[in-house]
Every structure is written in C-alpha cells, then in structure tokens.
Amino acid sequence: MRDLIPYLKLYRRHWFGLTLGMLLGLATLLAAMSLLTLSGWFLAASAVAGLSIARETFNYMLPAAGVRGFSIARTAGRWGERVISHNATFKLLADLRIFFFRKLTPLIPGRQTNLRDADLLNRLVADVDAMDHVYLRLISPLVIGVIALLAISGFLAWFDPTLGLVLGCILLTLMFTLPVIFYKLGQKHGETLTLAKAGFRIRLLDWIQGQAELLLFNAEPDYREQTLNEQKSLLLAQRRMAGLTGMASAMLMLATGWTLVLMLWLAADGVGGTTPDPMIALAAFATMASFELMMPVAGAFQYLGQTLTSARRLNEIIHAEPDTPFDPNGHQANVKGDIRVESIHFTYHGSEKSVLNQVSFTMTAGEKLALLGRTGCGKSTLLQLLTRNWDPQQGQILLDNVPLAQWQEASLRNAISVVSQRVDIFNGTVRENLLLAKPEANDEELAQTLTQVGLQKLLEGNGLDTWLGDGGRQISGGERRRLGIARALLHDAPVMLLDEPTEGLDRRTEQQILSLLFEHMAEKTVVFITHRLVGLEQMDQVCLMDEGAIIERGNHASLMAQQGRYSELWQRI
Image (cartoon, rainbow, N blue to C red):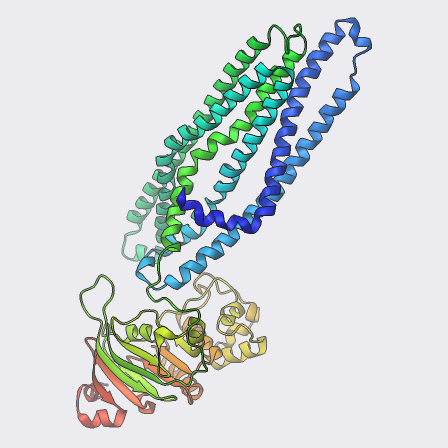
C-alpha cells in the first residue's frame, strides 16, 4: 500500500469534490435502502390492513409519499454523485498526468527511461487511469459501506436489538473478510492484466507503425502473429478477472440468502417482543437492502492488485533520479556565448568503449566551429553534452566560464538553440508546433519565418492552422527538417548547435538554408556538425574527429595547407 502514498497526497487538492461525492453516494445508498425497506413494510401492512377492519383507519398516504420521496432522492442522488465524483476524479487524473510528466521530463535522456515509446504511453494513459480505482473502487465504497452498515444496523436495533446486532455482525464480518479474500485471489491476476495491457499496446503500436518496413522485409505475418498472441494473453487475463467478479457476486447472493433465512427465523415470533406483524417484512427487506452496500466492496479489493501494479510501474519513473540533475537556484545570466571544453571523457552507461576521449576546445562569443568525422565518432554525443543532456565522466564544459552543472535549467535552455538530426513534430497545427520555440510570437512572425525556410506552401489553405498529424505525417522529411530550422530561428538564442541541419535537402534548398543560417548566425556562437563539405570556408575553426578524439583542428586554409586527413577529404570530392 505504500506504493499508493504519492497519489493519495494529490487527493488533498480535490478534497471538497471527493468528499461531496462520498456524501452524495452515502445519501443515495441510504435512500435506496430506505426505499426498499419502506416499500416492503408498506406492501405487507397494506395487505394485512386490507384483510382486517384496519383498512378504514390505515394511513396509506404517508408511506406512499415516503416511497415517492425516497425514489426521487435516490435518482437525484445517483445523478449528483456521478457528476461530482467523476468530475473530481477526472481533475485528479489530469493533475496526476501532469505530475507524472513533470517527473518524466528531467529523466530524458537517461538510463532510467530506456523504455519503448509505447510503454511510456501505456504508463501515462492506462496506468494513470488505474489510479481512479483508489477512490472510486476502494476509498469511497469502504467509507460509504461502513457508515451505511452502522445506519442500517442501528435502524433495526431501534426496533429489535437482537436483529440489529446480528445483521451488523454479519455485514461487518463480510466487509472485512470478502475484500481480503478477493484481494488474494485477484492480486496475481491484476498484475498479469496490467502487464498484458502494456505488452499488447507495445506490440500493437510496433505492428501498426512499422507496416511499411515489415512488409518490405516480409516480416509482417510474424509481427501480426505476435500481436495476436499478446491479445490472447490480455483476453485470458480479462476472462479470469471477470470470473472473479462473477464469483464475488455469487458469494454475495449466497450470503444474502442465508442471512435473510436467519433474520426471518429470528423475527418469526415477532419483532421487538410483539406478535407477528408487518414488521417482519420490514426486517426482511431491510436485510436484502443492506447487501446493496456490499456489492462494490468485494470488487474494490479485487482490482487492488491491478492498481498496485500500475502504481509500482509509475513509481519506477516518479522515484527515479535524473542522470543530470539541475539546481533550481542555479546560475542565471544573460549569455554571451563563450564555450570552453576541457578534456572531457564520456562513456555511455553499460558500455565499455569510450565515445569521447580527452576532447578539448575553446570558443569565444560569436565564433563558428565545424565538427567533421565519420558516423559514430562522437560528434552528436558532444552536442548532447553541450546541452547537458548528459554529463562527462571526466573534464568539464563551461559556458561563459560557468560549469554547465551550475546553470539553472531554464536559463541554459534559453541560451541554446538546437537543430538535431531528429525533428519531433507533434500531432497539432503548424502554429502549435512553432510556438514551442517562441510562445509569444504572433502569426505574422510565424508566417515570415516559414517563408524564410521555404515552407510558404504550408501557409496555403488552412495556413498556420494546417494539421501536421502524428510525427508530421502530412509533410515530407525535408519539410520536417526545415520546420526544425524555423524553430531555431524563432528561438534566437546566442548559442546555436546544428547537427546535420541540411541532411535530406536537395542542393538548391541546401544552399538557400545555409545562406539563411549564416545570415542569422552572424553574431552567434555556433557548433556545426556536417558530413558534407559545404560552408566550411566560413568557419573560424574546423575540427576533424575520429574514434572520439579531435585529430585535426584549424581553419579551412590552415588544414588544407597541412595536407592531412582534412585535405584528403576535399580531394575526394
């Protein structure tokens, strides 16, 4: 149960709505039990009165009004309880998703989040949804059940203490034994059900999103078969949980029947020491009505195993420590753009091979540096270290003579614009994707930036309201690349890190984009990664990397004069 503590703390924000929902739920339950009890007594009393002289004096109006009143109260209370409790629960789940996402963001990238996208999505959606069981199926039914149990037992005890005490003891015993029994029975199945949901979602998304590649390599039938196997596991787990639900209902019906027989036997000689009369029907119907409060109690603990498994999966993220923690009170300043890399050494977690080894260089504000080298030599990793997605195991990186580890995160992020190899496009409009870089930008500025990067076609039709689709499915790879460059232009930070910004673009578009970038970067500090030997003459420094180290460094002219590896590259083209 300790796994639920972080989520129970969030309940304090919505205590009023949750408490009001429980009160309305209690009022609805009491109205339902009162309706059935009063109806049973009224029918029996009316029948007896109709067979005797009491039919002339029996008050038919008051009990009939009570039946109508309780019926209306039950209907209105059920509607109000659903509206209030579900509204509070949905707000609680929204807060929980925000809470989870805020805990997740600092962990990326990091070894704790080395998870599939589908698994993270499952935790954010399905596992968070499972947390509503804590209130709707655990806390609320137990609190309402205990109060209603005392109320119905006290009501019967007012007429006959023996009947009230017997019914109270039976209900109390069931309330504390059935949940334990069904928690033990459902614990393993609940865990299996949660993991089966996660496995099925992961496999299904892999199958759907990878259709083109799977068909190309003739692997689609195997993936479809694996997806169907995951589906079978999920259906089996759901069938077992449904079986437990049916068993709980059967046990409650059996307990209701035997308790009713016992109560009728005790009341057969009269209720409260009187001769047998319609009060026997009142005791019988009150007994049947009292078991209505038991229905949600058994199911509450049946799904507790599923809820606890979801909580543990969420806690794996929530309690994880980021690999690069930031001090919220860290250094803040207007950045000039001086960068100093001092003998950094970096190895990825779980790997024995160094990615970067004793890399050092210095850049003054406004200086331009190009990084060259074959794939896997550590260029992109160096950019990850410059943005402090990772920290080097040895050495340090300083921005304006302040180590990156001492900077406040927001200040560091505002100081750096990044165009990475992978441009993430969110399932939204063009405007929404651009405002991520500059939230205060107006439509005119956004349109101008799109025109600068050659995306004026996106302004046709719906314009900035054009829907880009999941991952930018509505646009080409080159357009996604240029949309990432547009974000960097809008962010307008003093330091720019460009990782293959023109990859996938044709020669003409590449020249246009490079001209735009060099114009925009005139006064900025720039680190430029490229495989293509273009624009290097305008760089203040060119560093050629191999095996995680800088093997040649200088400007274009000096490196050409050295007749080394850099010169060989130019002679090949």
